[in-house]
Amino acid sequence: MSQTPAIELKGISKAFGPVQANKDISIRVMPGTIHGIIGENGAGKSTLMSILYGFYKADKGEIWINGKKTEIPDSQAAISAGIGMVFQHFKLVQNFTVLENVVLGAEDSGLLRPSLTRARSELKKLAEEYELSVDPDAVIDDIGVGMQQRVEILKALYRGADILILDEPTGVLTPAEADHLFRILEGLKREGKTIILITHKLREIMDITDTVSVMRRGEMTATVKTADTSPPELAELMVGRKVLLRVEKTPARPKEKIIEVRDLNITDDKGVHRLKGVSFDIHAGEILGIAGVAGNGQSELLEVLGGYEKATGSIKIRGEAIDLTGGKSDGASRRARGISHVPEDRQREGLIMDYSAWENIAFGYHHDEAYRSGPFMNNAAIRADCEGKMQRFDVRPPDPNLTAKSFSGGNQQKIVLAREIEHNPDLLLVGQPTRGVDIGAIEFIHQEIVALRDKGKAILLVSVELDEILGLADRIAVMFDGRIMGERLPDQTDEKELGLLMAGMTTAPGGTPQEA
Image (cartoon, rainbow, N blue to C red):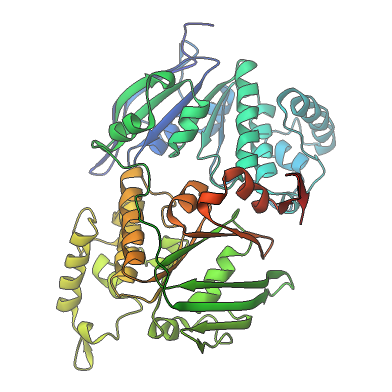
């Protein structure tokens, strides 16, 4: 193997106003290896990769590709230098075919047909070489996220990429799809490709990478051989302190039934059946985890329970039916019935990003007596309440006057959690509680959810992270295509079985997977 690095960044620095995102970063990535980059939210990982891919220009520093100093002013220059990037949120045209998406922006001439013909032949070769089989004539909107990710990789390879950057590539994949992706990456490595993997999942780092670099507060704190480190050591390097990597909780002690859901159905405006006969119960003092790949009805379930979507069927809270016909504007009545909701997308649904933290802390609860002085809002009381919540939930910086967009993702999530948990709900609906959250904040959020359970509250937890579901839930229901495929106890199942259920498969007698 060549000793000349495929990529060498020397003294890279980048500031956005007063915020120093990257501080004098140097890193060497050897050819034919899988190099992981990990770090907390705001550590500077994405900024560094955006500089390498030409989205940002460094304030100072140099980029060397295969031993040659290289200027990368834009993404086209990065592609010309042999760099491809697969983004966490795919850059595909949904109503184009696979073939059209691969060719888009890389046409041979003004005539499209010759480009498509050449691309079809090239895709066939690439698919066979790298286990990237996908129907070139399939429309993107009609294929799953695992296949869409293959298309993104094919796009990069078609453009001649020898260096691939993958940003959180398994966030939307089933365990089986993630395993297949890792086999693809191993195949790419064997063919001499160089891969940079950005992920917050320490297990993936340990399973797939050769080397791992750790970033903290804009600086590179360590680069180590993966075989010479461990998840606890990496977590401590990321956060600067020891981190508990497992959820510590006592067995649940369920009490009275809080919520009873029966035969819940939703058909959307296009006639698509999004929820299909969903039924379950949750008792006081337990966490029901809903596992599944995004887009299989979990979001619609949270919206109905939270009062933002209409449905048919029945929901009872402590034995009393609640209205399912209000939709869109019925969140207030849910809160009045003791239901709090931490939505899946904190920035679009949980916060108003241009408003201050103290304004956000009152949203949905602004009619509470504690926030009012006669007929008027008591802003001083709200600010004081926000200060207390920020201290209890370790929001950094603890400044109620900062706008929501001024906080990192983890601290934004803490603001939403503080608002909802501190109102002492009977039922907490929480969607993707740690999405995009760093490992230190994950530990804190998990502890708060377990503490709420131990106070005798019922919790519905929706997460695409199986580690999170297995660690937090007392019972697990798996959703696929709008249905609940089955329910399992965490100590009587594993990721393989849950992954099959997430893919719409059940296990027949004798252990053979079969379609449900």
